[in-house]
Length: 131
Length: 131
DNA sequence: ATTAAATGCTATAGACATGTATCATTTATG
DNA sequence: CATAAATGATACATGTCTATAGCATTTAAT
Image 1 (tube, rainbow over the protein chains, first blue to last red):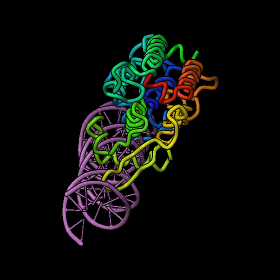
Image 2 (cartoon, each protein chain N blue to C red):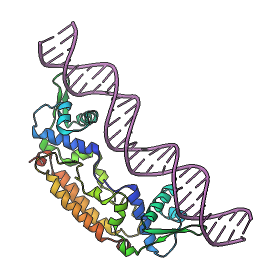
Image 3 (cartoon, rainbow over the protein chains, first blue to last red):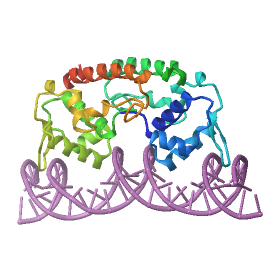
Image 4 (cartoon, rainbow over the protein chains, first blue to last red):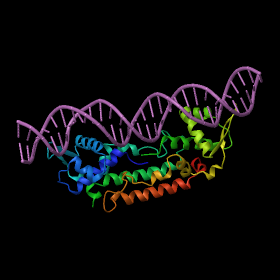
């Protein structure tokens, strides 16, 4: 009943990096700071690089920096490249189709909850998160 | 970003059974009605029996019936024996501990959302679900 | 009695997310 | 130039949820 580890790690990484936006951070450094398993962290960083949120520099003093302003990255953007936002567009009770003729009583409640959550996720940027 | 299949199946089964509360239903019958994989359905029924929501009768005309009034079974009760309600008592972003000194901006939003969801889940009984 | 149809129980398989390991390539430093 | 330290890429291992399979036991119907 939450997002995946990959999403969580991605959020942690980008959140942490956004605190010192222009600082080049290596995987090793982030590993020490965030306690994310090193090889997994590497994978996530690779993914975030491919998805153009950050850019990498190789070699001895290599690492990662943002490739776009943190104000322009919303939580929804990040979730979208990991779990996918559509992971919210489903029945909270996990029904493919509502097993009742009429929608069940959770339907409306969850629909509202979900809409408001998505709204917040879209409106909240990495910059907001650390304010 | 939803509850597990086991929870979903449990809810489907009990919801469907609650429509005809006093009817004995076999696993085969429920399988045909709900399109849940038969062996998995069997497992879930066994679990629901162990947890005393329903009781089983064996033999040729065996099956399952409620062992308590459907008004007394809340959605929260069901989730509690599958995923566990505590699966909601976590940070939506998946952080074990908030990586920020102060709680992040999602913290309060999710806390409120979660509380209201739990409230609904606790207040909604199987009887309500099919009204 | 015998058979059919149901649950009780439990072991095994599959799929997917999570986590690990390894080698190649790049670049700064001495 | 040699080395150290970083990323690139990819294969492999583990764990957990989901799904399947099989046999034993119980009971109704013939």
